[in-house]
Length: 226
Ligand SMILES: C[S@@+](CC[C@H](N)C(=O)[O-])C[C@H]1O[C@@H](n2cnc3c(N)ncnc32)[C@H](O)[C@@H]1O
Image (tube, rainbow, N blue to C red; front, side, top):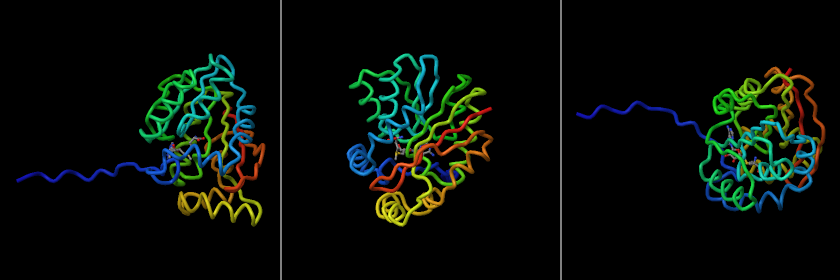
């Protein structure tokens, strides 16, 4: 008689473009639908990578933000974390093509502290991740980010936030919510992220920019870990 295997719930995640088969087209879709250059440039200016920084990118995807941070500050220590091995393979290839240096690790946002294992991050960054993550995981990732950072550390997020106009709500519904589903994205569209960041213990939580795009408005957020 064989002993039945215990049921273990495998943690799951929404892939970069909503479905695994769309992952190779993620970068193209992003450029077409999000005015990528505009919000990434604004995010990089806000992050202001310095040579002594240890920066972790939660949900680094295909590595676009890591490549840009490395271009601005090649001496900074950059660590990309993502649960999806397929997207990490794309990130690895992109980093090689760009001659950029970054460590890539497989894991969820909630694993940030464990992955950094004692190397206190000076900055934690994340772009377009929280909107597609379940509520409990949003909070767990923010708690892990707080724990992984040194005092004075900075949190910088770019993501779909409060959709303030009927046009932005309509575009968000027709694009992001079609691909990523309603459950995880709707609280984000109602503006939940800043209050979750406060609840995780961060100070000076500020929405610094709101950038309208063809897929809804993208908010830039900054917070400090005191
Ligand atoms: C829309 S993509 C954004 C990728 C990248 N940050 C960018 O700016 O292009 C979202 C990424 O978050 C990752 N992801 C999904 N759930 C996650 C979680 N709980 N923690 C960390 N990353 C997650 C996905 O694998 C995917 O690569």
